[in-house]
Structure formats: structure tokens, C-alpha cells
Image 1 (cartoon, chains in turn blue, yellow):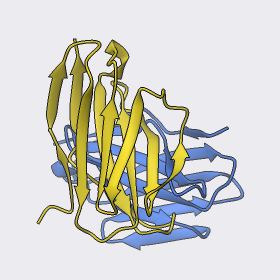
Image 2 (cartoon, each protein chain N blue to C red):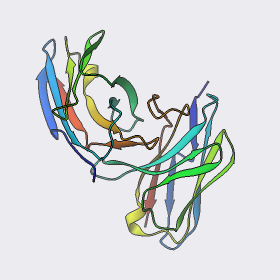
Image 3 (cartoon, chains in turn yellow, green):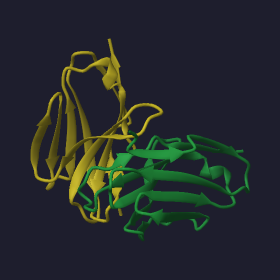
Image 4 (cartoon, rainbow over the protein chains, first blue to last red):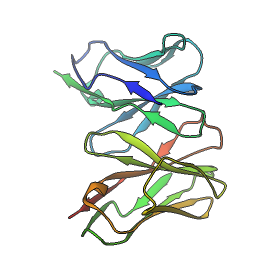
Length: 109
Length: 113
């Protein structure tokens, strides 16, 4: 079966750093995506990790540990516009993604 | 220059009706998908098409049928709509490889009364 867990909600302050965790148990695993989804909009791609380690892309970084079935998304210098849902998704090798339920991040002034 | 477009954006209909949602992508991608996002925001794969072949069908009721007239289009037909079908339906596309980023359409909010 496929199981992806992430916290339902998080709150952080503008300018701070926040880490959103994701754990997964899937039959077949090729990599881990992170998508951002603003309310009422489509998900948009943030990052894709295949190998263990940290990938940095501007204010956003994503980490993967395949042996632990664990990933996190790190957001630095938070801005109000970062308030959104962040979706963790596993590439299970069937040309489709298995998504977690998403973490709704609220950035406060 | 919309990459993945869907019509309609909103669809309100009665139980028992048959409806269709259209999706088009102008990215030259080989694979297209349909996802359902329910009220709890779970995004779940329904179908994907690669070069006109259905390659995934995630135990979706057979009232739902994808139709792909060509590589750039993947339409979703729904027969005998039920209350539980109310959700947001997203179309997406990617290059053939499963490791490629998926580009999502704006979504179609379906409400069944």
C-alpha cells in the first residue's frame, strides 16, 4: 500500500524559518516531489529529490533520506505569500504521484 | 499562453446527470493525468494516459471514463453523477518520464446537487 504522512497545519512568523516534514511508506519509490498549492489554485512544482541529501533552490530547500522514508521542505525568510498548502508526493514508478494530504502553512506578521 | 487548460472552471449539476470536463495541454507532453481533490484536500490520481494508452486506473468507478482524441487532450466523462463526486478535478501533464515535473491545470470545481 501507499502511505504518506505530513502535519495538517503549521503556523510561522514572517521572516522566520519553517520545516515541513513528510514520511512515506510506498511499494516502489523513485523520488519525492514537493508542490505548493494556494487556496483555490492548482499545485505548482517546488522540488524533486531522487538521491539522499539536501537540494537548495533559493529560499526553499528539500531534503530526502531514502533509508528512513523521510523528507522535509525548508522555507527560509518566510513571506506572507508563502501561506499555502505544501504537498509531499512520492513517485512510485507508475508515471503518477501518490500525494500526502498536504500541510497548510499560515504565515503571520 | 496557458500550458494546461481545463473547461469548465465550475460545474453545478443534478444527481444522475452525465457531464464532461475537457483538458488540453500545449507543452508537447506525452503523458496526461486526471486527479480528484476532495474536501479534505487529498489529491488522488484517477487516470493517466501516455500516447493514447491508459496506463493507470486507480480503482475509479466505471462511471468515470477518460477519452483522449490526441496527445494534447484528455477529457473526463462522468455518467450518472452522485453526490460523492463533488470535488475539484485537476488535469495535469508531464513528459513521458515519471520523474518529470507535472504541470497542473486550474481545476474544475464540480458540485452535484
